[in-house]
Image 1 (tube, rainbow, N blue to C red):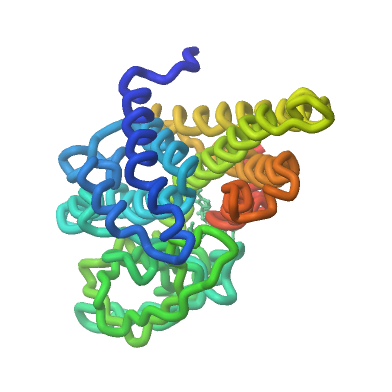
Image 2: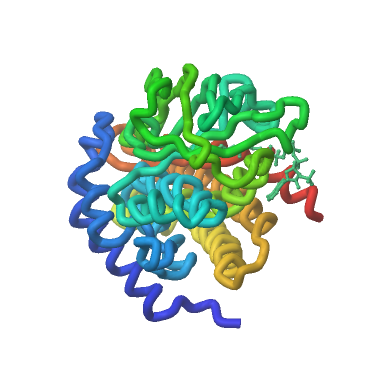
Length: 376
Ligand code: CAA
């Protein structure tokens, strides 16, 4: 058992930290104003960050999954917006094609996704189907060489910016989970209508949109996997995606914790730095302990994945714990900052707003508990 990162993994951390400081930190304000970070993503593509765990033969960097998780953690420490864009693009936007696609689909799409020429999105959630993903209503009907898809999706991260959408629709509604099929849909496909942008509490630089499919014709060769395999594809990739979201939560928590420590050492009250008052010192101790525990859960799940073992339960545990930690740590960080923490002069209010959604997307904390308890 070795809990240290390898030299290559530490190199990745350093490279991403430098990139985040140089290219992302100066653009935080623009993203907070709602600007989508196209230029940053382009530079990430040039550095190989848009396809970290994707094999070199498919245009990726061919690094291990742990390196990818380190990158999400470090990017999210500076910008949770960049963290979620990358996580969705890789884990649920690219991986489904890499693991379930035909060779032709991999050559056509994964190459470009991994190089950062294309951005990916994942379309599972619908207005009346969130946690109960099997109840989705979008329908795909085979008509000659095309599937005709009708329906609507909500909360689509990267929607409106993505070049490739992984879409889930029912080809056999009576068959429930086994009636769901996955499709690769290119941007600009007639009938793919980009709807309203959601105005979110946090992650202001990431786009989240509604989508409508109006007689959207998708070529048969763009079906991903077999008919009826879609739910399995969605769940298997969410198992991986949840480790990424856990790493995003960890990055946010670390940023808030480090800001709180720095402030508590500098701020004096009652003639002493507030960090030396036990009421504040104990908060910092709890933050540090929970962050360390989250880190261990996340990198354990990542390591299982590197070893090719099933990490579904561990991924759910990591996301459950890390997202709870992010919400608690960012809340307490504001408390340490007092009135200043409630203003936009300090970053902790942004961390707080960005943290909450990690308990919601890619399966709520309640769903993570369902996933875990089913496997006990
Ligand atoms: N891997 C492979 N197959 C799986 C699986 C997994 N992890 N989990 C379930 N399946 C299979 C089951 O084996 C079962 O098939 P069999 O009958 O052959 O055994 C089939 O799928 C149905 O499984 P369940 O009976 O467990 O299905 P369920 O209706 O009870 O739902 C659930 C399970 C875990 C609650 C699931 O609906 C779920 O994960 N819900 C949350 C949805 C979610 O995470 N949405 C996130 C949207 S994406 C997003 O948020 C991205 C973003 O923007 C950041």
